Image 1 (cartoon, helix red, strand yellow):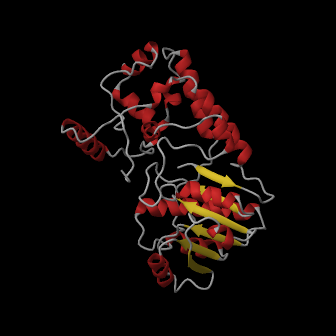
Image 2 (cartoon, rainbow, N blue to C red):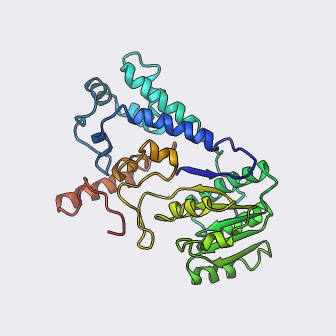
Image 3 (cartoon, rainbow, N blue to C red):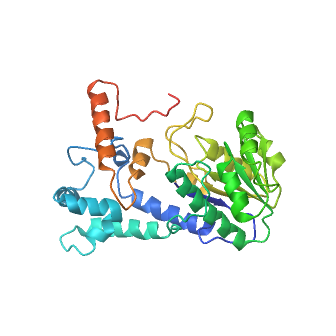
Length: 322
């Protein structure tokens, strides 16, 4: 996911607004190398032929790569494969190197530790929470002005509790569902007075602004649907700061997203940095490590079966609200 930072505080994070602006400009230059048709790929990520917009010498080189080289590129990046290869097209090597340099600017946290206590979370969720805890702790080290952490869209409060336990600062969890708030309060009974919960629907104009204080750090870990955009707009009208990792590209019945999804930042809007969902889906690659081949084969087989039955249109990527 993308890391979003709004920072009215005096500190400047290593992944702050200036760096993000530079990254957007570099991303725009890379996208300008390709035609608009390159943004519309099958959601499965599979094509039996080279797409017509791909330069022929690029296509010839990539199609002749052996399977082990492709797997290495998927896991470690194309630049690592291309740089030592004197037969790689020069323009392809330069593009891959630019992408690699851009990726290297993003903050990278070490492998998850055992800091997060779990609360019945799945392993992937536990890892996400652990990494987000360290990102939040980094914010606290950078500024003495943060007096409270506000977790928006807290659900049952797993992240809120972990923040209170690990950071030692007051933490407030907000959710639009009163039943979830009551459940979160029950689950946090043994955590202490540092954590509290309240009902708040940030889609209601002014609702979040009425709750926030100037010294708040608002956090959001994978806010669903358009909640991320709603959160950015709400915090931008306050004096609080925001640390957020965006969610998937799908919508929710209560928080639908437009298609294509427009950028939130002023610079993103000026550069018209908006890609269709089919292009954004290409980011859903596995991380370095064991490749879940069985799951990949099963998913691709299911997609092909649905397409044969006429139940899947690869040219259109509906949200779950459709």
